[in-house]
Length: 331
Image (cartoon, rainbow, N blue to C red; front, side, top):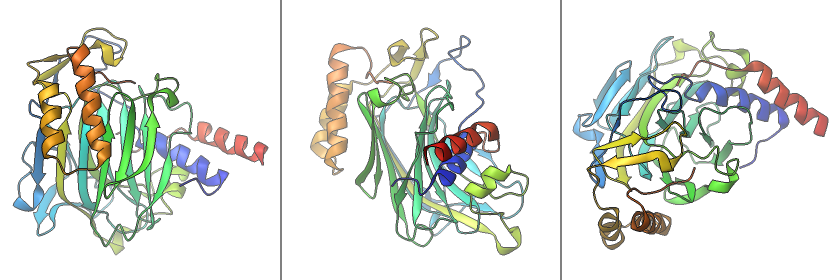
């Protein structure tokens, strides 16, 4: 799961900056913002093979439907079809069953992202057809590049896999087909300062990291320039299953700290009863069950489930080069 070299480290650092959400319509750490619309039920499943987006909005490009579910296609330069949930969740478990696109430099991705630039990522770069990357950001902080990992995956462009995130007060787990492949503890993210901890929407999309107009570092990370004449390149998403550990109609930031303690839930559903329901009926991995217990414990002492702590085409080449130089010095 480690990076192959300091060169790849630097390239990934550059690309990670590109993948991070860098804009928000209203950042609650800088201004008083409207409440986030919440998912006011404990569980929501979307089966895209039904031909409907359900509670998802298209934010870029066009998403079509076929036998395999929702189809996200890059046919020409500038294509980046993307959808996002019309609601936020405040700690939870998300399963995305998808088949990544092929084609040099094509990136199939799903992420959780918040208004104050907290973010949790899965990204599959088609050029590296046996790997998928995980990453996270806290408050848009891109000053360090020790956040990303690569995970081995079998034929992601030919086979549907389930890519999951289980996000609780104590830790974040990334799961591949139900197996935990990475764990981030609260304290490991700059003692919690970089820990994603605010209400998030789910975003799913595809883009060309190898687009000729991207920076040299991003193109290198993506494995080379994308040749659109060999396309189209399509990512398929069969379904998304969401568990919201703190169901509520809305989430409010009560101050500008961006800490989980500043979030209040409006018309929340009992986390304790939801957790009990999940523990008795869910067939998910034990790691998800433990997350339910964390949610229940938090709910018993607080009015909400406590949690610790794209612009796809931006990059900071100088910082990435700094990572490269630091790596060479160590060598």
